[in-house]
Length: 182
Length: 82
Image 1 (cartoon, rainbow over the protein chains, first blue to last red):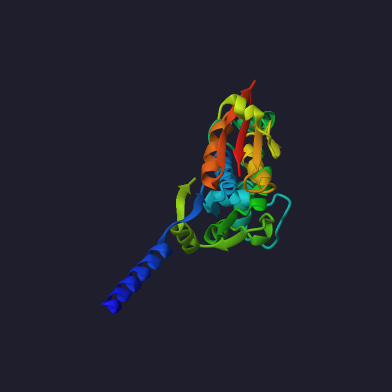
Image 2: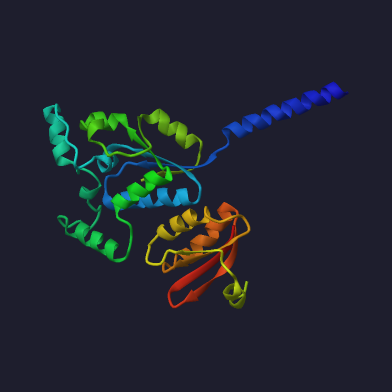
């Protein structure tokens, strides 16, 4: 019965290939929803640490998280009134983020930044730079950008930056072994 | 490995990550390990106590052999083979 056996082997081979294609990759997918300094710090430490462990990293910045990716030195013209207001009220980039707790009108945030410096914890700006060098992928939710009236021209220069939607996130998350929502 | 054996080891590369905080030592180790060949020995210096537990996990993940660590007054010397 060699043909029968061949068929069985072929069948097994097909099943194996199918299993392989659906198996999770050595990849982490992080949704960064929060725009709080502390939470974003945590997400960036995990992202850079993962790269050190040779894990692929896909970060999906949405809602308040997108504010971290604004460049404080860039200004864009031609925004409507609401977009201007939102742009004015929300933090303009990583340096303007606040703590989720103990902010105390900025005093707590300043104290934490001082402590980080003293204890040699890399600043958020340094971490973003490192993440770029290590190949951390940053995806930005296009809908959040539109909603808050942010334009691509005002976002930071980052090597692996893509504007996308929930489809990209779901696809990335589906093939990731680790998923986080921060 | 015993402390004596570790002390007698000849490292092909020493990474000084003292003074950096998490994930600094890991990133430093990752960068430095690219400079050595499989079979060579690397030593990581860290002042961050968490590194003592992180580097063995990192070695396991990267398939490197972790030899052990020595504590020297708050400085941790960690040895591994690529």
